[in-house]
Image (cartoon, rainbow, N blue to C red; front, side, top):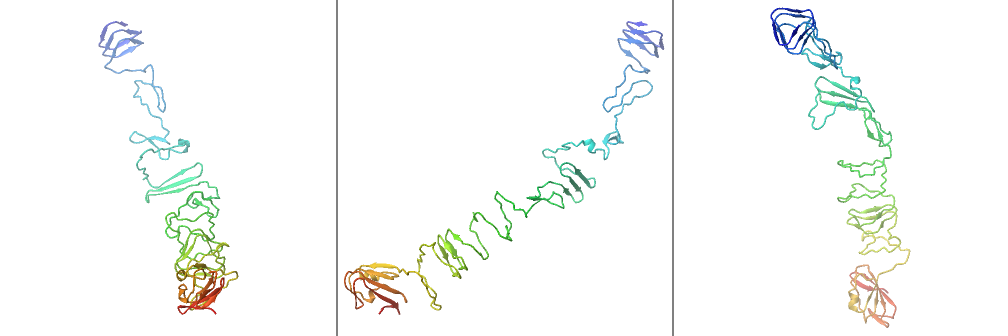
Length: 374
């Protein structure tokens, strides 16, 4: 059968041989028979019976098959039912407990939150997460109390640091180990920032960059204390042994400098007392014992007016004219001793006594007046 143009057939058509249609073949009944080749359009108001030349090949995770007139063809997504399933709404879902270590395949990063990821909530009961790798870390989240408990196993050297990071064995500094801190440590705890219950070995300086260093309790020094700056003691100083070596001055505002045992010295140099010094008191007199030479202060005067104007005189070399009366002597205090040496080169009359050249005469001040020694 060969149709080159348009042909319309109202009844069934059975072909005993091949049919070639170059135009349009319209059949209102059934068309059956051998092979038909259509280079134009095929229009049917009925049903096509038979298999198509090619079927649907099964792709990744899809089932395959062929189209025929024996029924509807359904193509499904393959699932194993243990990890991925189809719910009642004909939707794919992850089966509870379906994702295990095998599915994750020990991925380095399972989930990454970047930027502001918002709030991550676990609200379906209590959850436990275990991570294996390096140290063993287990975490438990309690959505009722909103608490996260982390139990981790972290390696420490066991010398400077102790613990493994677990709740029962927290990471901590080994305080029994002689640790060395090369950086500045700041202790800001109120009241007791640093407590040393045994000895403290300070191999550097103790300073307070914001003010003074205050010692609130007794300070016991068993060795030599070398004070480079001025020292002010507002309530006395007591030294039981070892002496005091002061290189830049010491001031005692009130109180005593009590030397139970030891010496006050100036590094084997000269110890200068630049103010009036009393040994004992009027009610409790004390002795002054000198094992070496006693050197008294020496001054000179070239006139009786100059002699009278001297202060704290002990030994005076006089080179002026005489005579000298007791009222010409300097102002004194009770108990003061004055030695007057004649350096005039001739005879000098002092309080009616002739004093030869290079000789001396002594006086003691008592009862608010000078008295000549015999």
